[in-house]
Image (cartoon, rainbow over all chains, first blue to last red; front, side, top):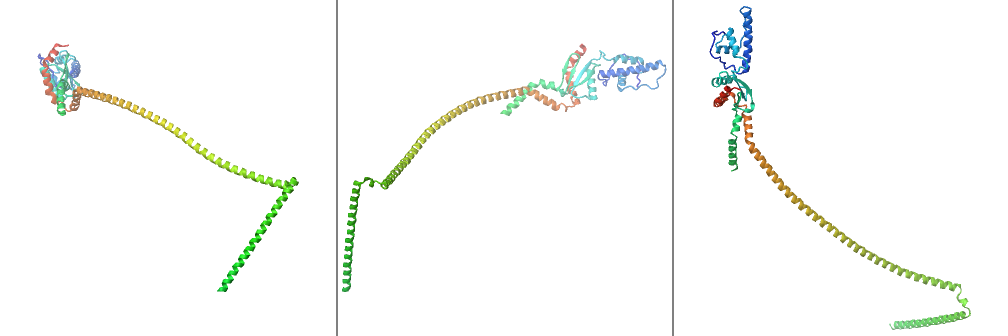
Amino acid sequence: MVEHSGEANAAVMRLPPAVVGPVDIGRLHRELTALDEFLSQAALRQSEPQDLPRTSKLLEELSKQNTLNLLDAKDRQRLREFIQPANPKMPVLHMSFAADPSPVFLNKLVSWLRTEIHPLALLQIGLQPSIAAGCVLRTTNKYFDFSLRKNFTEKRGELIKRLEATKAVNEL
Amino acid sequence: MDVLKIIIILGVVVGAGALLAFILLKGGNRSAKKTKVLDNAQDVVKKAEHDIEHIFNDEFREELRNRGRLHFEKIIGENAMFLQQDLRLTTSQLNEYMKQEITRTLQEEFKKYEESIMDAKQMAVDSIEKTKEAIEQQRQILSAELEEQVSIEKTRLISRFENNMADIINHYVLSAIGDQIDLSDQLEYILSDLETNKKAIVEDINGGA
């Protein structure tokens, strides 16, 4: 259990890059709820708990980034309110790739998204092997196809032109 | 020598005399016999005048009958021989005639038969020629039609292939390189696309549902 300064942070809450999507948010929320219940029961018994439950690395990163003390009930309350599942303040983007992305890749991508698009953006990952390369992005109302398949389809005219040119050369 | 000649002359004279005597004796016997026969004939005529029945007795009749029978048999034999010859000749002629007639008839029939066969052969040849011409025409029509169909099908396939060539190549390239490109290598490409569409994404997120 990592303890941070228990001062109230009026600053805007942020998500660490390791927290990628709604699944992570849900997991964090469940873990935080369990920890909160454990500590609340200990407070009710008016006894200092001997063995605190082991928190995940994700929860530690989250509390560290937001300078919150998980032993503090107010901080836990703030954090619980922040990581509410289906929080409307956290827009969810759906991105599909041809293969399963690595954690490093996701880390970089999520960092860029939270820097450039939205600080609380969540990313839901999908798999579409048919796109070959690139990705397909789906926001609330729009669909962006950045795949190689789309690129080939857009450049189909040029491909036909090149093929016909090659055919003409071969016939000569 | 002289004696011998005299003996020979004498011998010749004696021989000539003997020969003359023999001739005279012989001529005498004949006239005697002839005279005797004449006498017998006169005797028979006389007897016949007196007794006809005595002449045509059974022996004479039997003799006549035998003579008649022999003569009749002779005539019958001769006629039979002639008849046999005629019959042989007639048979031979008849055979020849029949042979000629049969040959002629057979030749005529064979000729007709040959003409019929020739006509039938000609008809068959004509029919075969017509059938052959019809088959040839049909073959040419079918060949032309087949060539046309093949050409159309070929053109259609080529057109279809050319129309779908881009899709085929796309599919092939995607299948070929789909598993070969690492996502880490694509990060810059993805980020550049996101950067290009950043404004639209942000507007959509801020705009809400």
